[in-house]
Image (tube, rainbow, N blue to C red; front, side, top):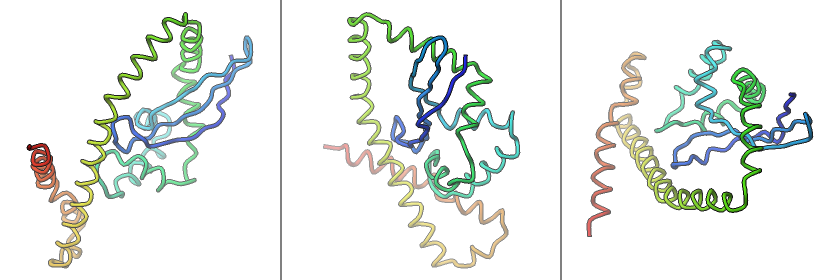
Length: 199
């Protein structure tokens, strides 16, 4: 069977509010009959696989990612930083080919769409309930990273203003400085969350 990817795009609206990237696309095949189904792939899955097939590109992406300030996965920031330098579509196609996912997903979607209407309703109900529970967690996670990143930037800016000699230190010390406030900021966020939840 031959499969073609169309409408390839990405978004970073992570399921739990984190800056994670998902590739979304339509998969089309004309064998044995015309059929299209939705496909998706997490960027993290692709990056875990990439060193096996393109070690140089994997190292390049790793270096770009490590140069980006911020908390959490930072995958959306990574994609924006990479811009057009990396074409992810052929990488996704290669991974799906190697893992046999085109055929596996084709068969899965054929079965799902062949389900009786009653079963579809049950599955939809489960999905709706799950989505409602995720909304609160999604916002909590976004608040966590927003507070931590904002506090981190402010503390580093103040530290450099008062102790400008930090920037003249060797590379190892400057790298240590990037993470010097991490534990304290996390503790501050925990205390703030407890405070906001007190009646």
